Amino acid sequence: MNKKELEKIKEKALQEHIPIIMDDTLEVIEERLKQNPPKRILEIGTAVGYSAICFTDFLAPDGLIDTIEREKDRVEEAKENLKKTEVEEKVNIYEGDAIDILPKLNEKYDAVFIDAAKGKYPFFLKESLRMIKPNGVIFADNILYKGYVMSDYNKHKQRTAVRNLREYIKEVSENPNLETEILEVGDGLAISRVKK
Ligand code: SAH
Ligand code: MG
Image (cartoon, rainbow, N blue to C red; front, top):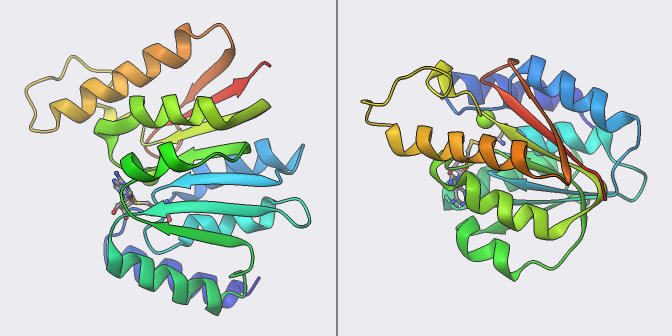
């Protein structure tokens, strides 16, 4: 992968306030994935491809990433970024709303990275559970949402997002087939390991 191009993509995304994955969150994901490099990763929320490009470094040889993005301009930019960093063969972008695309997918994934509309996390979880392999891992970014999720804060215009993030945490915590940790890295990261 072309790291120099990756740095430029990161700088541009930060300048444009695109919410790309934070460095500490990426480090934790790398640490979890490198023990057993995944063959297939599903990402929900591509933006300009930054995280997907980073994840190509964690794949098994011949590994592949599927990633979903609904904003046309971002899909175009992500495709250019995949070319610039020379990873276009490892990342497949689905353009459209994950709400429509996920139910049509029938792959099995070793890892899922949920990083899109916070109000849809419970739906993304349901679809991820349908497609995750035994011993796979589901990561959910921004799970603590600036601290709103763990406070008694509920009069915010983002209350639907907060309610759904809380619902996500409840579901992964209560599911007997998952082993879940909630980490305070970045904007909060939920890591759920599938037992079987
Ligand atoms: N994973 C990226 C950042 C993603 S930002 C990175 O770390 O580099 C979240 C992205 O999800 C935005 O680009 C937004 O357009 C997209 N998104 C939000 N809701 C979506 C949905 N329902 N379906 C598809 N994409 C969605
Ligand atoms: Mg995020």
